[in-house]
Image (cartoon, rainbow, N blue to C red; front, top):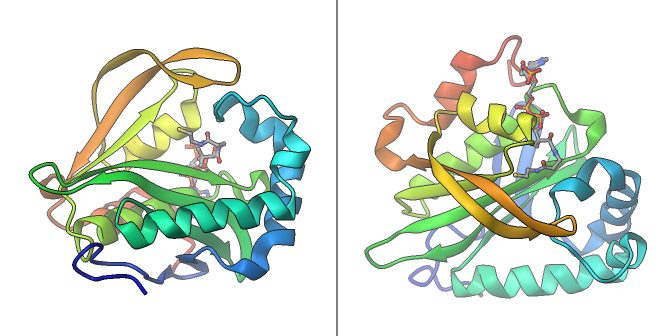
Length: 210
Ligand SMILES: CC(C)(COP(=O)(O)OP(=O)(O)OC[C@H]1O[C@@H](n2cnc3c(N)ncnc32)[C@H](O)[C@@H]1OP(=O)(O)O)[C@@H](O)C(=O)NCCC(=O)NCCS
């Protein structure tokens, strides 16, 4: 059981049109493994450096171990780990991690989607729903997204949602084989008085939810 005092806003289900977000499910192990294996070249440039090869790190057993870890973090109030579904099919993940409460009330945003659903506004809709949840029921004040300068898609996603570029983090994360510079983007609860979903609806042509 999650203690609502430790982690307000968890567990949660968020949805808009064909896009649904929910806590990671045990039964998604095989589908997650299939997606992650099929998307190796799409995902690996943005993933932490690893010592083991991609396949064993993305087996159904690896999913179950990862799910146990993130579920524990969610219960402790340090993570909001969502699976993303599009038309009922698993299509990615959005996570707010390293949540610190107290005077900071901040978390770090991470996300990926299946290449097959990219370029349709699905990822930005999923991130918008998580932003509104983080600033609403979860009670956070700041969401940070640290993005490699080369990751144009990810930068466009956060910029469209109103995140501001706050600076350069030198050789900040060990990604894809080396320490990589990252751009620090952040969104504050008061930056979007109408919410991130309303911003997404303004910015997206031919929205998936309408
Ligand atoms: C980063 C990532 C999640 C972005 O996904 P994405 O699908 O490009 O992002 P969006 O959902 O915002 O879609 C954006 C595109 O859809 C278009 N779009 C938006 N709504 C649309 C709609 N209803 N119909 C058609 N197209 C639409 C936008 O115009 C945009 O295209 P553009 O960027 O060429 O202008 C994805 O590239 C990914 O998973 N990458 C690998 C992992 C990764 O980099 N993670 C982040 C690390 S920091």
